[in-house]
Amino acid sequence: MLMKDDFAPLYIQLQRKLRAQILNGEFKEGEAIPSETEIMKTFQSTRGTVRKAIALLVNEGLVHQVQGKGTFVLLRPLQYTMTNFGGFTDYLKSRKEVAVSKVLAQQTVTLDGKVYYQLVRARGVKKDDSVKYLMIDTSLIPLAIFPGLDQYDFENQSLYQIFREKYGIDPKRAEVNLSPVKIDAQMREILQVDKSEVALLKSEGSIYDQNDVEIEKIKIVCAPNVEVKIMTNLNNNANFAE
Amino acid sequence: MLMKDDFAPLYIQLQRKLRAQILNGEFKEGEAIPSETEIMKTFQSTRGTVRKAIALLVNEGLVHQVQGKGTFVLLRPLQYTMTNFGGFTDYLKSRKEVAVSKVLAQQTVTLDGKVYYQLVRARGVKKDDSVKYLMIDTSLIPLAIFPGLDQYDFENQSLYQIFREKYGIDPKRAEVNLSPVKIDAQMREILQVDKSEVALLKSEGSIYDQNDVEIEKIKIVCAPNVEVKIMTNLNNNANFAE
DNA sequence: TAGTGGTCTAGACCACGGT
DNA sequence: CCGTGGTCTAGACCACTAG
Image (cartoon, rainbow over all chains, first blue to last red; front, top):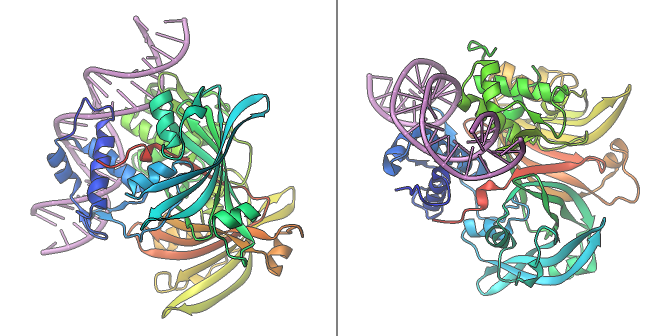
């Protein structure tokens, strides 16, 4: 079932197939997906590969595993979970929603002697022919790394898709700081913020590629109705020093 | 070097040892740690185990790997990174800092017919004989799951350590929503917030154990000088549906 | 007892970086 | 070319859950 000649490794292919089956409702929420052994047989693969694919889904928060029982689909109501800073289009696509972007400003700016392409967008989703804007997203992208980036149409194309397909650069790691920010007029208008609100949530940080090179500085301000939800596994810190 | 009879699996033992070496400065920031093959020989283990240990360190944000080159220690200035919601003491211990807790309130409350033990604490660190409070932490713990929990002294003991050692329950997964919250008098006093600030960052959510049972509801309000930093790997979403 | 996930081994081949 | 990390295989034994 899995193709060795596909560009993606087998465990990624398997992750995609399993996720698609879950999102399509083939495996119901709260119920078990097939056991690792069954998945091995179905996809003609080995235990290690299957476990790696499932581990990614666990990390995504789509399933969880219980020893002796099985792997279960987590129940989570549809909501805009802002776990993936900057991967907005990809994220919504993986959740089968339609992403909408509106460019508010674009220009080249110089910062610390480096030239950046600045892109400010309102990001939202299409719901029943109307658009709801969920965040205002400011990107600073070094033109030394992405020459000619300003020629693309960012209303209809995913920034990260262009990074990958046109420049062969893959966003690998995000590091963002979260803080409250006072609401200004532009935020209030675009995100339709009620007068009673005084602050919104701001995420500010950097995206790095596989070589730990900073490829984007981001600032995202979220509408009050956007749930910024973090899901973490706590395994790592049960263990202090040696 | 690794002990089979230790309670922790080999890859966790190895993770701890490597982390300790990094934090002790044996491997410098920005430089490479020994290769996977070398670590295999040093600790008499196999590739899979070594890779699993390193994967955990990557997830922690302590190191990153570059194909063909090696595994490198990431440079990060000392700061209070709030990635592990609720694992405050554990986190600081793994960073070799001294955690301080002050109990502000404790009582039993009933919510939706269930009885909870409510614990409100100011959490901080000891620096040169003075204490800096960094967050106000409200926990709701179901007494049905943790009978007799109120007998412990939470100024000097880690809540999660008691969960693990006295009740055999291990916090596994956190799900929190982040949002701004208007500052009240208590926050302003304890966290020493400047008058110009109008909002702080609030993290509100639940902690689940290995069986996906909710074992704690948490609400954490952070001081303005606390960096709430999220580090994520973006691998998962480069791949849409199948 | 049978089936599940959790851990571990001992190999293999590949892609990439630097020499 | 060699050493690095990235992927994959084909087994093994264990711990836990449930009938």
